Length: 319
Image (cartoon, rainbow, N blue to C red; front, top):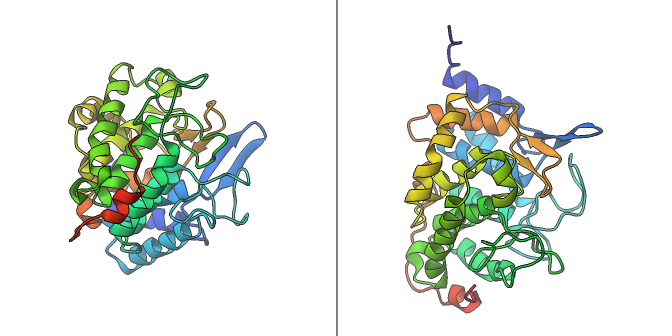
């Protein structure tokens, strides 16, 4: 007989108990030397997005605010609007120091901060418009898969080495653009979005979403369910052109959901596949969202604007 599902109130209490004193929702990194504690923008932003839709109690609202406080500390001091995997300045548990800001943390942080009413959607759109051209794909590089072409984006805000193209990262960028109102803005990003979505969809359709395929499609993610979650979230945010991709990946997400989002499942990795990150707190937040009536409500981060977006257009170059 299957074990009965825990009550929602108990799951929420378990999730809030995992939150670190910093406000982060922690993860663990499996390294050859053992397990390393880790507190990242990356995991905390995704947990905060879900907590915003779930938490109505005083404790949940307080925990959500603390998570947003942590995300604010991850903004890069030298590149406003860009976010790092870890807070700048060496604070808190982490695997490694000195990581530059990147597209994934930037996208996830903006979604969470806009959704939590901590930042304005318009500000997010202008910041992303200024930042994303730095990551535009140019000519293929050694080691690139054939799909690594414009308008896909690379990963790191690091001029000498912007890293590989990761399709899950690109889906998160699309979701952030939609959450900030790019699809309704009339600026150049509204033209970029369907092109970028089409390129992601075409690349995934040529590969079965297996663990081995993820090394090509999404080198920073350790499991196909993460690609599926990102695609479904981006579609829920209103990204156009993702219906086919979301439908093809929905069974992958459904299997993860049916397994109750295993806490020991690897979620993330470095580009070469190791080490592995696990995040029981995030998986618990996802399990809560699966049980909720409205697991992800993009209306929590409305992007309602009036007037033009000339600042945005001035900063965007075609990819």
